[in-house]
Length: 365
Ligand code: NPG
Image (cartoon, rainbow, N blue to C red; front, side):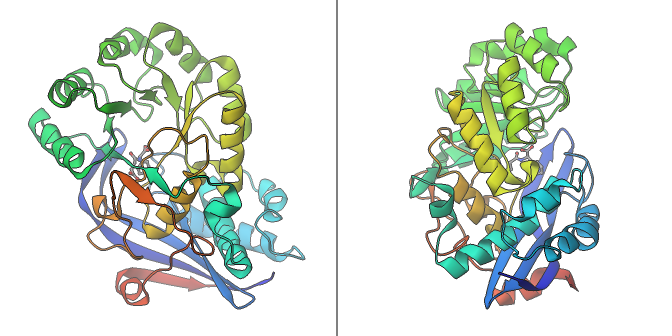
């Protein structure tokens, strides 16, 4: 397979509601879609980098630059443009996992469409539908939070994740636990605390949370291991897990007992599967994270979440939790689950009319 054409398309999608985290406020998504044409088929990938380097060091304009200047030439230097074959040449470019993931996913999508194989089938999925969780942003008041959670519980979401930060943690958790009883509940701090907050974070222990996600900075594995000894809530790592190797290290150190897998954060779906496998071998459950993806990224994530060790509901919500109109057929919630696409490749394509309307720029390479 040889790539004939590549398109880097930026789209702007307004979110249905403001999404606030400890690192910022998202009102709309500026998304980079990568489209490749190869051997008569097309392939799509979505880059999850944010416009600003506030979640990790990557940012959208940087991803565009690294794809056009370094990653695409590396692909073109190969005799075959296969998804697995790009990994050694991508490894020579340091960092930029989200840019790598987007281009590799487009190649993999094209390859699997040509072969008539679905993403889930290729990755080793064992479920036709996956349980959906929902991530609820930081709000101005507890009342507003309870209304939001109420709506999601009504819709059938199987677990609720609350974003927390210093000043918005114990009280919102208490309020949600008291109001909604024994729902599956977890929290995500996006690195907002330090080890000095251990005693405070232990105040979450009585609420029987599934997990406390990424309380400390991403490079602080030792701190997470120490914190895990001081709190009862299981620690789950997100930002810290950048590869299968880092997952193995974190598990060996006792820094994590659950892992959030985001393909963009680890450089693509092949590495995401390796993270899954390493965790499974250690008896560590995983779940699929989300970065407010459009239907393109969501389709591939939902396929990944069909693997056997994804035993916890992921941030794989229905399209309408994010967008009034998605670029693909919307993913819908059915009995608290989202169906895994079974068509070739990622199993969905963007609607050309919608795409044209939301496109803000196109670079053809
Ligand atoms: O459902 O896609 C979703 C959002 C889940 O909370 C969520 N994502 O830190 O995990 C995160 C957070 C995020 C969103 C991170 C956007 C980066 C960008």
